Length: 195
Image: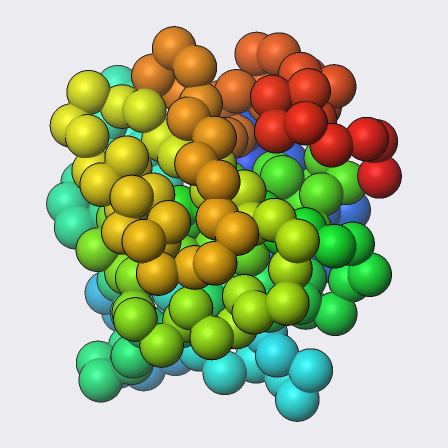
């Protein structure tokens, strides 16, 4: 994937080559037969301790910065699941919840344990059981002008004990907040010591 369009895009998002490797991100340059619709897309695997269980594909922005819709594609019949479940194995008494995979990768890269929900409509009621036993669950809520991020955060907060909504200031998502303000600002925003 080095020097691919996906690599270039991820670098603009501040995601390092080490993070790209750790999360096994890829670029679909030469798709397998039957997978041609994913050509040119970023491949984001969902990995568990047992190995990969699914892949979501993200369209990359065009030269004008716009992204064709739908932005994300999955294999037909693929269900919704949490991204970066490895974070549940970290020893911290808290966990961050992000909307989307790239925000989750950025927050993890900043040193915080984070799991991702695949989009504003991706929350499933049964996910709440995964968060039992944490002192705090910080929902890093997107504050874009559409309001979907805060709607997701409120839904999660209703169902997860110890959840605290941490709105990203200035219409940011977690990734853009980190890019503009750095990791120290995120730690201060949610009120935790450096990991």
